[in-house]
Length: 585
Image 1 (cartoon, helix red, strand yellow):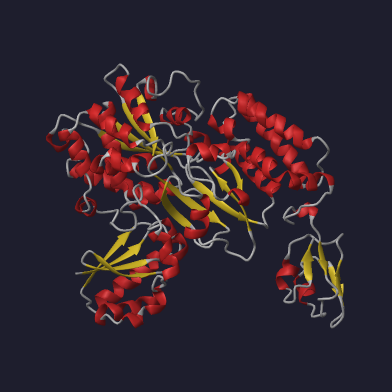
Image 2: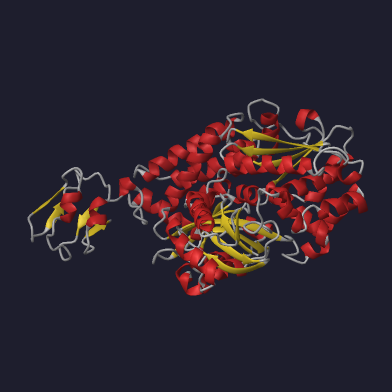
């Protein structure tokens, strides 16, 4: 039987997958084509959406990319007679095939393949078999031991051993315990958790139920940001279907284990990614971190023993129980086991979701999988770990993806946001961008974070405006170290990372801004000016016509000039010039 699957994650829908689905639905019905039409989630190749996969039974026969509703006739013709020439222009290229072929998918297993809205699809792929095995064949202690053997560390950023957190919660006194999933994914450029929930929500449910069984929790809660409406809808549907199958609720699989499931939509505060702030929000209070100890394993939600892991961590659990901890531990490095999912974005040719074994080099992801730079500009650095992370420069591109080795660079693994930058990026401006984010997202509870991040931002603002002064770099470093030492939670403790790593690797750019009042990347608007190269200008007047403030003067077929006192530096003149005569200096 032929099945046509239209990728409908958020990336696909925003690219027009809904229109493609409706168009294919109409033409399949109109022409009475013997084919099933289905939806699936994100396969990870976000840069090629909308994506349509055509299966003959279980075999993928064609993957079509950048499909529009206008391609429905061609696809219908192919479904009718099997003539590949009808869809040849839509087929995934060999070059783009490398994107998926170079990955090892565990947490993303099933994403972009199964229908996330149908539990039977998940079960047919082996879903819930790990839960059944855990409940019937294993004790809670043996489940924790299997996770220990696997070496699975928390994928939310800290990399803390998962088994240790589970064991601590199980060992805590009390009958009332809670298992919580942190799906409050707030890093700019990160969308791993969203994609997993949208594309394979049952994998998250199964992993959480296994975790709940291991620690002795009778209630599981997913704290997900309200900005993920599709993820919430699909997770709600998955929970209801699981209840109907007797997988969520009382006496699961006929055992004595019972566990309820619910969703809490968070308001999107970045600080609620910190586990104790998340708990405060769950309880209905303002999301602000608690002092530790006690840790959540002893006193968490409603002061009861609680365990918190993020989506990607739970997404690995069912695979580990099915295949064994030793198989998972075979992947990766001695210090970092298994795989890691990254959301790769920025000045990259192939952006999307990437899952690779730990130990791979950054260059493997950026150049082999990501395809390198989107433009002809050279690779400059990668920002890893979001606003709490740091920059790793081009000459360190062979750094291995490993918790300790990445930390040694000054960056962190983080949740997996990977923003690639080229030579056009100003590193001072980049540090300012992330400090602006963290300063706004600080909950304000502790002085070091509340005031310190604002002071850092003020200094960076001055430098980017050409008002930097001698001693500013040292003042930045001193303030960063004070914030790291005194902040209460991970937000403040890691907020200085972008500043410290850019000073460490790009100090010359800071010095150029301060001493020469010059932005080497020509990105800081107050430190650049637009001029016209007389040798290249042919007097076509296009630049003058585009200028919104009349800053450009001249005569046709003669040289034009820009009055820098009037110029607002919008760049429209440069975009209009066909001869490269307008230059930004």
